[in-house]
Structure formats: C-alpha cells, structure tokens
Amino acid sequence: MREADVVVVGFGFAGGIAAIEAADAGAEVILLEKMRDPGGISVCSAGGIRVTRDARKALIYLEATNGGTTPTSVLKALADGMTEVGAYMKRLGDAVGAVVSEREADGNYPFEGYDVFGFSNVDEIPGVDLARAWPHVRGSPAGARMFKVVHDNVRMRSVEVHLDTPVRRLIRENDKVVGVETDRGPMRARRAVVLATGGFEADHEMQKQFWQLKPVLSAAVRCNTGDGIRMAQAVGASLWHMWHFHGCYGFRHSDPNYPFGIRLKRLPDWLPGKGARGDVRMAWIIVNRTGKRFMNEYHPYLQDTGHRPMDHYEPELQDYPNVPGYLIVDDEGRKLYPLGAPTYNDRNVSFAWSRDNLAEVDLGILKRANSVEEMAAQMKTNATVLARTLADWNRTCAAGRDPEFGRPPSSMIPIAKPPFFWGEVWPVVSNTQGGPAHDERQRVLDAFGEPIPGLYAAGELGSVFGHLYMSGSNLAECFIGGRIAGREAAKA
Ligand SMILES: Cc1cc2nc3c(=O)[nH]c(=O)nc-3n(C[C@H](O)[C@H](O)[C@H](O)COP(=O)(O)OP(=O)(O)OC[C@H]3O[C@@H](n4cnc5c(N)ncnc54)[C@H](O)[C@@H]3O)c2cc1C
Image 1: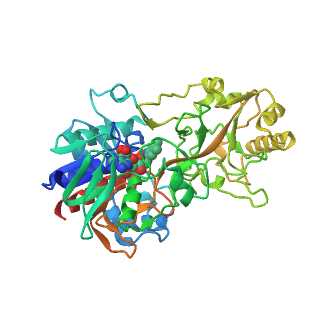
Image 2: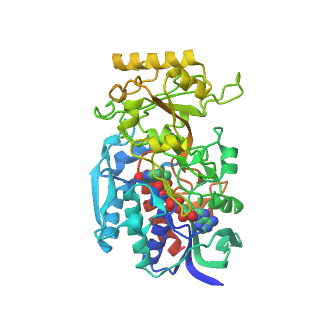
C-alpha cells in the first residue's frame, strides 16, 4: 500500500497549497487528483486573493458578512491570514519568476472595516503562454497564472502527485482517519488526510436536496461533485453553509450537450452608497416570463448575488416565474461588448463568445426580433406587457432614476433601436460555499463540534462564508486555510 505522512485530496489552489505547506513542514506528501488535468475551478478564477492591512477591522467586516453563521475564532484565523497572504504569494511567485503585486480594493458592502482590504494578483510570468499551454482552460488569464505559480511550486517539492486518481472513501481505524480508498488502491496517511475537493457545483442531486432554486447550471467544471462532502459525512462531519452559493444569472447553450452555464460579461462591482462607476454601461434588462422586470439587473456584486431574485416561488402559479428570465438588448447594446464569457477547465469543451454577439444568434443562444411584438411572440409572453415594460424602461433611462429596482443610473441605457436581441438566462453557480464545518485549525468537526481525528478540510469545501460573500475570499480561504491545514496535518 502506498503510504505518506499526509495525503491531500484535490489539486486546486487549496490542495496545492496544503501540499506545499505540509512538505515545507517536513512531511512526506501524496497529492491525489481525480481528473487528468489539475486546477479544478481554481485555474478558471479571476485570480484575486483578498488581503488586508488591518486584521482587527477585517474581522469586524467578516463578522458582518457572515451574519452569525461562523465562529469568531474561524473568521479571526482568516482575517489574520489576510495580513500575510500577499507576502506569501509573493514568495511563491519569486520562486518561479512570476511578478506578484497588491492593490487596494474595498470590500463589497459598506460594513465597518470595508476599506482595509486589497487584492494580491499574479501580473505576469515572463515567457509563459498559458493559452497555448492549457488550451482546455478558459477563464481569466490571472487565475491561470496564479495556478501555474502554485503548480510549479508543488513540482519544486518532493510531493508525489497522482492525477486521474479519484478518491472514493476515507479509511478509519479507531475513530481516526488513516487514509483513503482510491481507484488505484488504498493510500495510507501516517499523520492526516486533508480534503480539498471543492464543492458540489456539478452535483445536481445534492443541489436538489439543499437548494430551493433549480435547475442551477455549473459555470466551469464537471469534477466537483461533492465527493469530499460525502466522505466527510460518512465519518460524522457536521455540514454548514450548504444553502449558500456564489452565482448569477447566465446563458444556457443551445447545444444540450454543452455542460456549462455561461457567465455574463463581468462589469465592475460597486459599493452601495458610493454608486457604480460613471463610465460603465449595462446593455441589458431582464424580464420574467410575464414580460416584466423583476430585479435590479446590476447588483453591487452581481456575480455573487445575481441569481437570488430568481429564487422566488409563486404558490398561485406553483412555479418560479423568473426562471428562465429573458435578457434583452437592442442593436446598440448588442454592439457594446460580448454579452457572454464562457469559463471552463475541460478537455472536451471548446467555446469562445463572439465580439459582436452575432455568432450566438446563429447558434440560437440569442434570438433576433425586428419588433417588440415579434420578440413577445418568440418569448411566448404578452406583447402589451412587454411593450409597456420597454416603454417604462426607456422613460426610466430618460429620467435617470429607477425607483422600482434601484439600478445605478449611470449604467442605464435605452433599449429602443431594433432589431432587438434576447436570450434565456438561468441561475448559474460559479462555486458553492457549503461543506464540512471546520475550526480555526481547519480540523473537520463532527455533529457535536468535536474534531474528527486525522481529518482536515481546506478551500471552498466548507467555506466560512454563510451569509454574504466577499470577492477574492474563496481564494484567500484556499491559501490561508490550505496553509493552516497543511501545517497542522504535518504535525498531527
Ligand atoms: C469564473 C470564476 C472566477 C472566480 N474568481 C475568483 C476570484 O478571483 N477570487 C476568489 O476568491 N474566488 C474566485 N472564484 C471562486 C474560486 O475560484 C473557487 O472557490 C476556488 O478556486 C476553489 O478552490 P478549491 O481548491 O477549493 O477547489 P477546486 O479548485 O475546484 O479544486 C478541487 C479539486 O478537487 C478535485 N476532486 C474533486 N473530487 C475529488 C475526488 N473524489 N478525488 C480526488 N480529487 C477530487 C477536483 O477535480 C478539483 O481539481 C471564481 C470562480 C469562478 C467559477
């Protein structure tokens, strides 16, 4: 039987960092990845890690965003870690010749402490063309650069990596986790196992049990099917934050075999109270199946909460009237920018969105209509209601105020010039937050709050966020929680 001090399961950011830290602490490490290619969601991410210059104020902010769903000791470990993670990332970058920088950036909501944060990013890896090296990855180049830095740091250490090796079960002896069952046989952990298997973005059965809203399309990966959640449950883990996912509304491909939801063009986030940036135009509005608007289409942190207004069940209809929604632009809006931004880490997928959105009309993801009446007929919605919605919207734009839903005025543009273009939008999950609960040492806790001996978790598998999310914090958790889990596992 293969054996090491620490066995880490899952090779995204969290697993990679846990393996690096355990190895640096002197442990012999095996890192197991289900897929042929490592990277999980991490490699598709926007590559921003939350950092702070003030751990005390960061903790106040994190308490507010978590609405009492996470113990202070756990949030404190994250806040403290945010003061160091930028320098840590810089060290990893320096080791492989990458350029890493930090910049200031407010939190997403005006809670006390919102202004003590920033991001750490990998700006450049000279001489490396990741689009060519990893053609199966589509996302932000910054996320891919960051994963390359982690990947190269793993390779610089004597970590034994097994790709294409799904882990099926944890092995326990006398209540302690002592290894894992894999498709290539058992692997023993002399000290501990770290689960870093991501969430359940691609497990629709699990979603059905924990989420009211359905269906929800996965934005980027097929690999994260809640395996670590089930394995932890099987040894008695308590679960938290299962309801909470990071997502938005997005397109569904017209090819039924296309496995992912398609995220929308990412517009800059804005802080309530300060308003959106004056130069940002959102080309679209969204109506529901009755032809009416139902939300502010430009939430302050749209990629995080954009799906939430869709989660409205109407007992009179016995249905969700906002699913799917219909995104509408006119010909001017259609020319502004690509409306969709596909993301994936998958060898069997290849799809880029066109600059002028016309290829998507040919594909049937978007539809063209020469008049409002024609558009209503295509949507099978009431033409009078839809015409009134558009007329109201154009008046709202002229008045520069959206009293009904509070859309930032600077983002509003009329939808008046035919032809019109529209497409169905569905709830899309970028990543889940739920999973096994853990303490500040990343020890997985059982249903009574006791640590399960020999078992640690890191990354979005049991994220600390259980109320409102802060951008860049899933990566912060991967790096900070991954470091803690790796160090703790090495000395368990
Ligand atoms: C488009 C996009 C942009 C994002 N941008 C940001 C951002 O800028 N900042 C931020 O903080 N967050 C961002 N997020 C969220 C963030 O990327 C993820 O939460 C984070 O990368 C998760 O990392 P992880 O290591 O926990 O999981 P993953 O990176 O998903 O890795 C989990 C790995 O475990 C493997 N695995 C699963 N089951 C098994 C098994 N049974 N056996 C072995 N291996 C298994 C998977 O194959 C996978 O490789 C973004 C998400 C998306 C979709």
